[in-house]
Image (cartoon, rainbow, N blue to C red; front, side):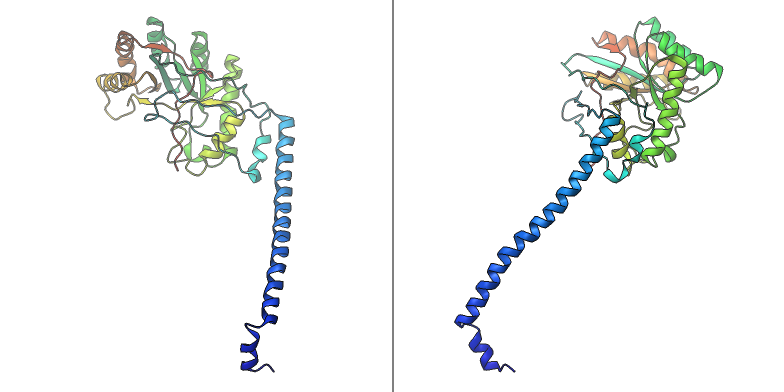
Length: 316
């Protein structure tokens, strides 16, 4: 048994210093070995993930899209393509024909331009909207929902035949369902995509999320959903001007003021309007809106996949 005096004599002795030095040397040797083994395992894991991505690439072309700002830094921000989690990659194999060909985005050069967009159609208001657009010789964009009656099917075709852009909004427009997972979103999107194609022959490459790309219903899923849709080559557009045409007791004067006053604040505007039966005021306000926008030197055009989109910013 070692006495207290012997312990005291040991610490500070040459022997204790030798032991400390040996321990230090062992630590210097062992730690790098442990680190190397850890790096080896991480390297193997990354290699496995890379092989998985390569296997997917053999089945489809993964083309990230460069999204450019169409507004100043104070009014919009560029978003980064979120990366889908590797363990949730199964849905990337679903709907193998649900792809669009990515195209380069045109940079804004300061031109004064307005894009009128109509969500939620077709409806009994669609022919009236189309007639107003024809009267002023302007083109617009219709983000449509699923309907399968004779009149609605004729309106999908009429939108295309009159030279406007048609894009997917949603089949069900059921926020709780479509935003519950990437799988449910793809199922809903594919149904609307095929419906448009079967009726019009158009393979759309443009869409708008119900409620916008970031809303209170998709806080936990918007990043993987957006990542998957961009991976598949589709372009989506949010908006930076709201008409307010779904406001209770809305008037054509209120819609006119909302659109015109906000359009005049910027060079490029994506205007949110609605094509639904109850929105009589939207059709009533549309001629005066177009007249005033043109009077102020703005051109009016339809969206397509080459237009750099206005996108809601990701939350930190």
